[in-house]
Image 1 (cartoon, chains in turn green, purple):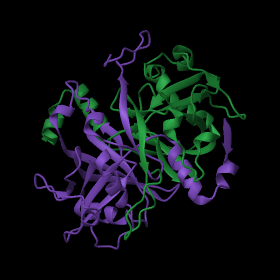
Image 2 (tube, rainbow over the protein chains, first blue to last red; image 1 turned 135 degrees about the vertical axis):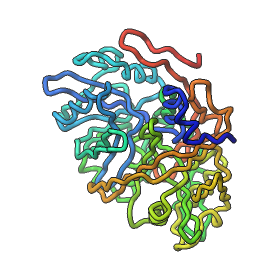
Image 3 (tube, rainbow over the protein chains, first blue to last red; image 1 turned 90 degrees about the horizontal axis):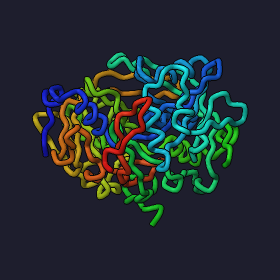
Length: 212
Length: 212
């Protein structure tokens, strides 16, 4: 086992350090965030930081770096108050990755990548037609993370769309059946296979498999 | 495709809503956080919210709910200033899940689950001996998320341990080779298989496979 000390990490070439540190915290979610400007220009960007925050109320969070290609996402969601979160599935990974290119302002990643806009239930922001699981969110708040000049954005989930057969009786959504991928590092995409689900853990009892 | 409106979600039984909303944001990281109290009592707890925050400096974040079994983790990392983040691999999922049981204060999840403490390079907090990838972190800051009474904890990665052969020349860490799992929902564990890695995306160029 190799020990990567602070000094070794600091001395890595910056691109290698970015790959290394982006991989080391484990697998990440892979979602496309869809927004629209007040004058109707759509934007689509891939994010690997969307995280569950709470179920009651249903909240999610994601990290935004300022002054990057993601700037359009931020401006749009602040101006319209809404954004969509759309799962990336195995057959979309190339197009999804392409959304991270720095297109000029006003150019829609939907058009550029061939992913299709999908509007539902009078929600202003565009969903991704090809996504099996889609979430319509309202902007709630943001926390400026001064440690590295990022923003942690919090959204309330107002609409969720997915095929009903993916949902178990207990509410669990089968992401394997949905074909949802997981992100790894800066540019990797992986397809997970469910190993098991376990019972609610208690101190004096071994957890039981729910799938066995 | 079924539309789960805010009303439908709100009216779900609370346990089903927890399963549903915990699954819907996509795959999550699966890590064990190890801490120690000033008087030497160790604690180990599973988290699915550890997220990459930045590479320079190397920072990660995770979400802590107050007044839960995770309370020991918080008290310890505040008092000692350090914690470890340890990947869960496929052969550890049952023991890792068992750490979520509400053990009485002072009882170590290491002892209860049979996972082993591992101390390295004079770092006070215990690593998990069985984990293939381990990160030693120093507490940096916390943001109180008033929307749902959570804390977003930020840690600086000071030590990283992993087998050197997992690291590609460009810095990418092969988590599939490490056997690292991904969490799904409240109680699911999945094993990802890498589909592809893509070149840095540019506006007028199709992304290329790095593995093909």
